[in-house]
Image (cartoon, rainbow, N blue to C red):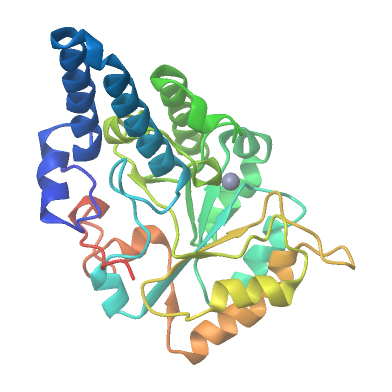
Length: 299
Ligand SMILES: [Zn+2]
């Protein structure tokens, strides 16, 4: 199986094939070893060694707290170049399934002939398994958004992180009959332990091109402006059915944003597809896996 890769830099491909750790993490390990040796060889220099290690930890932490960074491994922030060339965009909808919101989202997508990717939480999928199956039955895609959506996800060690992702993977595959191929971290936050876990489970990390902040912003015009700014082929948009903010009159924001967003995409000649469809080198070619995809350059 080929390693999932965003293919942005040839060097990233090479390091992916060499092992599960991204080049930046491997370099960090060497940095630690060098700082340790310096402290042993020249004991008086120990403050410099401590400072060097602290600076490196700060950089690794920053890479994990910046959802669109590639410092900690492959990360899709846009669709593959071949999908952009087909005028495709992907709307990704997180934190469901939610029985109060998701059915209406499905109806809106149907009304506009659009397909979307639902990054579902494992525990929510188990609670609403029929709704989770309905998402797939209507031609959309269900992908892995961890098992419990813990706000401490980016603080987990390698074993706990693997358990979180594997539990959701098993539940979602069992419920929908299709194993997810994409993963999104809760709030997009992660740490260096994530990349090896995703490689083992054959999952591609996906973040986004733009997000609407629709879990906190209550004004549909504001959310639409954020999602639709410079809308273009290859975009990956992030919205929410679960944890959705409510408008002043109590409606989930996404339901007020989606019709206008889909109409705008259509007027620009854009086709709204699932991530799985966008990963195919040719439309409707199921033989190719996302690993073979070559994403577009980031803006
Ligand atoms: Zn989420």
